[in-house]
Image 1 (cartoon, rainbow, N blue to C red):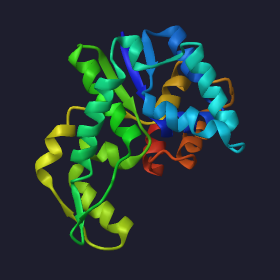
Image 2: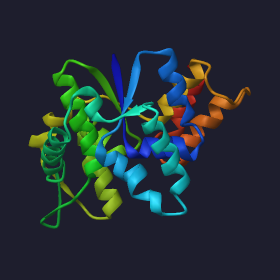
Image 3: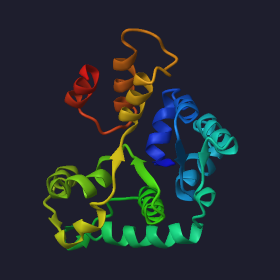
Length: 224
């Protein structure tokens, strides 16, 4: 069994691009299970359910949870309490890594950190897993934390300092984006859109709905 943990941004990206169905199709042809945390469920189902603009997307995701296409941690014998405790620990570490003007800058959300918490719990059970997350900051914590200083300085428009002692905590996590997820769907021939430009279209669609992917990376995927 392999588990793909879905962050809010990835779920919303797929929903907005009418691509949620690829999760169901991928589950049919592989041993992959899809999981979200309560924090992600709150951001994608509970909170937007009462907002007319976002209600349709929330209902789509809710239906996939009801159908067990997307599962919660309890399905893997992991408690909400365990996730909440580890999430808080990761939040505390990550949000004490970037300092500007003698203040710590909040750089991550609890939903993102809950995905890491679930990954840690699954890994401790020796269950292979990977996190699907579109937002750049959390991935940088694991992949290129040294780039955080430049990116956050550009985002905030003033210099920041990094607390480098905490980088090791995040290096063990693995990530993909919705971009790679739709690429896999294309390669598995489960995209419902059959057109020579279908791959290009879905790759760019994920970028323009929030995936932090460059044009160069998209060109590489197109030519693989």
